[in-house]
Amino acid sequence: MNATETLIAAADARSAHNYHPLPVVVATADGAWVTDVEGRRYLDLLAGYSALNFGHRNPRLVDAAKAQLERVTLTSRAFHHDLFARFCEELAQLCGMEMVLPMNTGVEAVETAVKTARKWGYRVKGVPGEMAKIVVAGGNFHGRTTTVISFSTDPEARADFGPYTPGFQIVPYGDLTAMESAMTENTVAVLIEPIQGEAGVIVPPEGYLRAVRELTRERNVLFMADEIQSGLGRTGRTFACEDEGVEPDVYVLGKALGGGILPVSAVVASADVLGVFQPGEHGSTFGGNPLACAVALEVMAMLRSGEYQERSARLGEHLHRELQALLGTGKVTAVRGRGLWAGVDVSPAVGTGRQVSERLMDRGVLAKDTHGRTIRIAPPLMISEEDLDWGLDQLRAVLGV
Ligand SMILES: *Cc1c(COP(=O)(O)O)cnc(C)c1O
Figure (cartoon, helix red, strand yellow):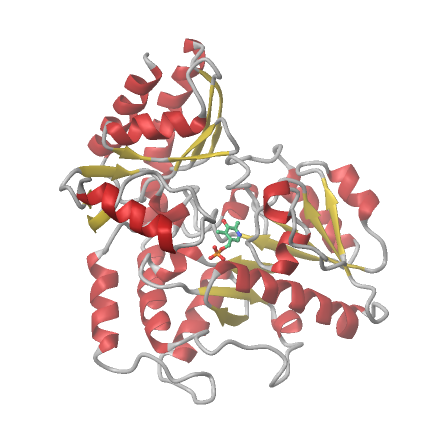
């Protein structure tokens, strides 16, 4: 056995099999490229499910982390630390909001948003105790905790993990009439992804997010946008909601906020909404820690330049033009997405999504299938046009066009 096979067998023997990774063992990474234990290089077109929007080991982010490692890394929220106020101030400003509640992983931020909406519902909206309902969309992906899988429509995510948390209503994504019918006076929030990533980069019909915004405002319901994957430059703007000029009540952020270095997530909202929390009602040992704040502050400084959003928009246009051209070949049945983010459905004649991902890997490109037929393309936003074109060449070669 070579090093790759030995390490994969050892991992298989000792780790739970809750993932089915491609058979590549990464040893080092730089920018849009990773190198495996055999010294082979691969172009990373997954970018850690958009946690690596700024590339692997982005020098500005590594420097910010190193500098903070020399100062203080963890205080817990039992004490203040000197970056916390700035982190909250700048993140609120980036979102056009007032208050921040930091957590670590994405799903913790989603859980936090659920708790926020429920408490806001009881204390501000006046919903009777235990009656709060949150409307979510079919095909959603908001994470993996017990409560969050309770409102998943993916059988793999749910089976054998019940009993499920009540209080959620699922309506088809993109269907405003269904959302309106699901709402009652006990509805406290709508929680949706502005573009559904895990579902296969599903873009809702034009005008949907604006209509959800109007409906939620009319009904005194919080519009909570899970921008964990769609946000922070991925779609060519800071937030995918901006594409429709929509300002939600609550942003749920994660992934790229941690710069690909450590998990950083947050709920960001108005003072009316996040003001519902009192000491002891919610928290996290690591949430808002100094190292997380140092990295996230640098992430925000990079976003404020607009450079990454601009690159994503410009290279994204190029990417989508090239992918659209594949539609005529019969090898691809659909292409969706925005900015440097695409879902490409491959025709059954070509093979499964998994097989296409494996053939791409053999040609030095890492991408991951989702839901059987979809190849997701989401490179780091700092990818060069040459590298992107090379990646597209490999895709065309695998498709045989
Ligand atoms: C990845 C993701 C999450 C969960 O984030 P974790 O950090 O894996 O817990 C939630 N919502 C969306 C839209 C995501 O893409």
